[in-house]
Structure formats: C-alpha cells, structure tokens
Amino acid sequence: AFLQNPELLDVIQNLTALKFVSWYIPFETKVPMGIAFSKMPGLLSARLENSSSSTDKCVDVDEMSSPISIQSLERLAISRPSVHTLNYMATWAMPNLKALEVDLGFSDSVDDVNAFLRVFGGGLQTLSLQALCYSSTTVDVLSILTMCPNLTTFTFNLDWTFRAPLSP
Image (cartoon, rainbow, N blue to C red):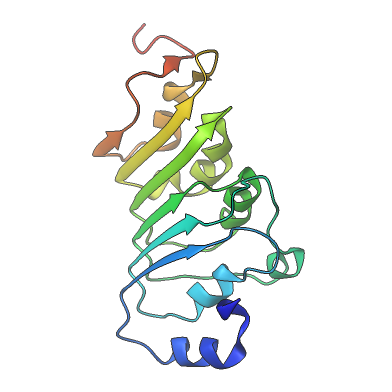
C-alpha cells in the first residue's frame, strides 16, 4: 500500500501547505493511516472511505502502539469504518476536531461510534451520523447528545427507532 512507503511519508511530511486529503483505502491490517496523518502538520480536513468489502477487520496492532497526534485536524469524515477502526481512531490526539461525519453503511448498531464520541464529542460543534439500520435496531440519541454538549449542528437518519424518548 502506498501509505507504507517511507519515501512517500517523507514527501507527505514536507507538504506543509496540504490542508485536505480524501483517501479511498481499506481500513484493515497494514494501513498506517494514522501515521500518515500525523506527518501532515497543516491538515485541516480529511475524508476516509473504506474500500474493503468487509468492515470487521482490525487495524494493525503495531500501528496502535505508536501515539498518533494530528494537532490541526478540524474536520473528519469517515465512511464505513469498523468498530475496531473507530476504537483505534479514538486513541488519536485531535484537540482541534470540531466536525465529524460518520457513515456507518449497513449497521447493526450506531453505538459503534460511542467510544469515539466519548473522547471527542465534547469538542464537536457539527456531527453527522448516517447508518442504514435494521428495523429492530434502536439508537440512543440522548446519549449521543450528552457526549456532544457543544453541537450546533446534528444530522441523523429520521427513520431510526429511538431507544429512549426524546423528551420527558
């Protein structure tokens, strides 16, 4: 994979004017996307789309041992991540993250994003959660809003079945 090429990572590190990346990559073993991101000091916005047909693979354990810090990132969009990918990304340092867009695709549980929201939800101003859920799937919108108290914009599927009433 191109992200494993040390020469390319060196070139990426020197692209200090780079503000946005959009990658269509497999979110699975041996994809060091966090390391690549941490080498882009001016990166403000990133869009990641899972090119793998499976969303249940784990990220590389070796990558998880290195702390990832993406200081400038303000906006992140992720399409079809696995729960393992979301949990791994929840370990990254992204202190300026203000906007998050997650498209879970077909999902048994929107709760897969909770570990990520527990870490970054307090700083988010914009959150977009999309998922095609089964009719038996329920979504705890109140917990999401509690984890993200500073939201000014929240978009989600109106056809979701809510786990708890939205008002007392």
